[in-house]
Image 1 (tube, one colour):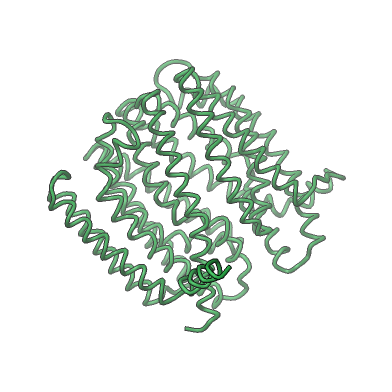
Image 2: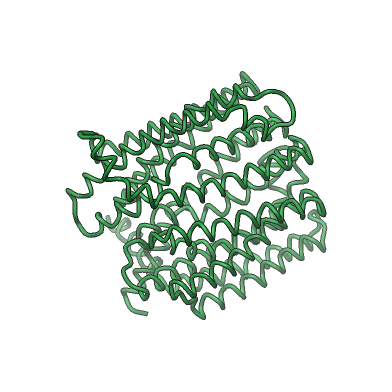
Length: 497
């Protein structure tokens, strides 16, 4: 393997490691936060927090005009070409529109409060909650704009630091307010968490790119192409956040707030574990993919990302399947034990997403808003339909089945579409890794069905599956990257130093 290819794989692994490590730290922080929140709020309180948080994200996605995504696309092109003055000017354009979207989001949240209340809750009047959450929507818009600037300009270290600080601030704020105010602290937690994230992100961004907003009207006019592209992202955001809101609203009506709490707990476990691998996608992979100028470099970039993501995700999936009976009581309380069955079957979605997510970024990187919107719509509609059907058949476990089945179809649809439209071709290596690890994941899932979690057969067979998956991934990554040699050089340097 050439040095250039080795460095390319090494780059992918490096930034997955950086942001995956942060996600691992997030898991530890979440362990403490979720445990305490579960004790202080209970399943119904966590369900209420999930409903309100999901609705805030829905309003945010509906009103941000796609600036977080389209801004990265436009600005990264300027940064890659070395056009510093043009890039700094476009930063002012992004900031101007971020302010507009912040005001828009806050107004919409206030005016839509009664409608959101009627569509989300079947009991009580929660309109005031949504009015009080309006500042959080505005803060999210400002944060997203500044984060887009940092991503496009490759300030990845700063993004990593922001995430670390944000985790600990969120932990302290949520635990203190839940302890003193219980469920009454949910709205303040959402607002204060958004405020802390905004202050951290803006603080780092302004350090590199000071605020200059002269000629705001002309800056807004310059940003219209970005907004036109962003409107597709708005529609996709509405679909995605709307699907999540519909899912939780359905579960609230069909099973009650405690069922929403169970689903959210399981969903967060799967999402956090997947985040160990996927957290670098938006921060590193998307800007790199946006700079690819031909089909060949695009295929290589996507396939390398798929390979490394798949190899890292597979052992995590096996570990999650086997360890979830221990993790659920540890992360939450004994009341959340039913979540384990959901998580075990939903874990497959992490492996499938490792393959589909890099492909889905292709349309985003090409500025093909219609394709991006189409693919997003197919997945979101499918998720809602499958979840309703599977929940009625299998209850909480059915929600996990729906999550995994939706990604099976999503993978097939995304690959066929990118195959035809962008001439993307998956390599034989990817297919081989996928087949091997999928079989191991199926074997691990069979273990969870055949043996009780307290038996030595369960843990013996589970550990064997984990070792086979982990060993194969380490071997391939060792062959394809110079990471081990780099670690050895650093260790020797410290010893001699």
